[in-house]
Length: 290
Image (cartoon, rainbow, N blue to C red; front, side, top):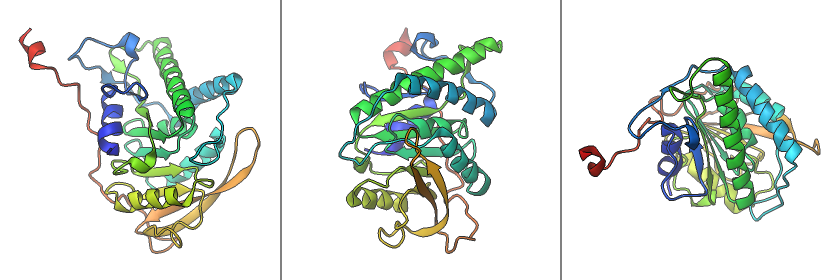
């Protein structure tokens, strides 16, 4: 399966993928508030990162209250980094490594979706995506996504904005799948993976996908050996210590830049023309005749 076909196209268009009950994506009002087929709602004004993150924090407090537990799986130990730690990491990515509102963030092994939700505050014109192999975790991320969308719609209503007319600036989606089956990381620009407990064959596969990607140029990993052992074509730029939610356990996150020859190299997108296409669902000929 290709990341571009399965995930980003739906995240940008606001349409759920056909016949895929385990995938949830959106860039517009929820199913209960959609307009009739063929009509397009215009995007709402972008929120500041602080505003968008504030809505995410409301969601995270509900997630903590629900106390949903994700057990360990074949893809490695499950756990989540604190939202504040992820935000500190993404602030660095924004300030130094070209993370913009047009970027496409991909979390490989996205769990309940916390990093993707935080990243959605930075990529309101692009997309924030997640791939998760564990069915329980993937289902929770999709439920959490609905809650975040509803919170954004409520904020619009309180601000006098009609969510029917102006789609919330949330382009976020999750895919329940084995990320090793992906054929490409495109159109992701920034890849993140909480991979310190993942088996080596998975790490090797993800590095291969990163190396071959036409769009991905930043890889945020919890492994220090992606260049020396797994052959990542780039350089380790810097690291940041992140804290896990609940336990407070700390791990270093390493930021790699594709094509960089040293940690002082300037980092630029490998493809400056990348974009997420906005496509409306195509109407059938029968519908056109009616």
